[in-house]
Image 1: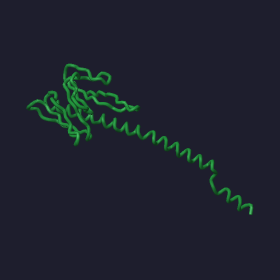
Image 2 (image 1 turned 135 degrees about the horizontal axis):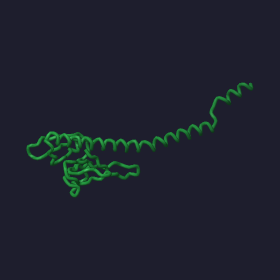
Image 3 (image 1 turned 120 degrees about the horizontal axis):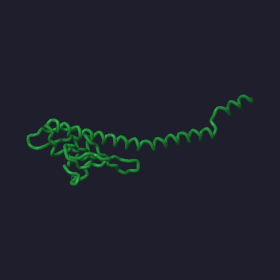
Image 4 (image 1 turned 45 degrees about the horizontal axis):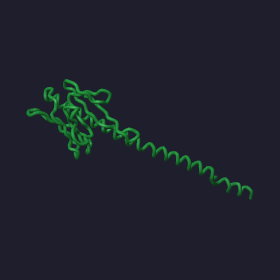
Amino acid sequence: MKNYIQKKQSGGFTIIEVMIVLAVAGLIMLIVFLAVPALQRNSRNTQMRSDAASVLAGVNEFITNNNGSLPANVAANSTTGEVTITGAAGTSQASAKVRGGTTVGFSTSIASPPAGPPNIVVYTNTTCNQNTPVSTAGRAFVAVFNIESGNNNSVPQCVQS
């Protein structure tokens, strides 16, 4: 009879063991819920950098195909993500691909940025100085865009070709 009672008592979990398992599971869930937004933000930032690099590659292609002539306009179809890079009459076009919903603006001067809220702005005759576009003489061009920081602020980025 004594063995039967001992076996019955050793078959279940104590309330302390159940509470420890629930605490560990809660801690794991908390870590997951805190990590997911940061992963999503990093993914969006990586995609924006990739889009800017794609636009700069298209501008480089335009310049190469047109004997060093800078483009006159860079515009994206925000539905399809197709970016068209055009120049003066007699020049050939170039293209690039960005994700749908991304807008691309173009300006020949930092003093007159494009109207509206483009996600990526291409400036000609410009270089980057610590993520800030700076006017310069020559055929340099940059792409300026914002990335998200940890506290829901956007941080400007300047990428030079």
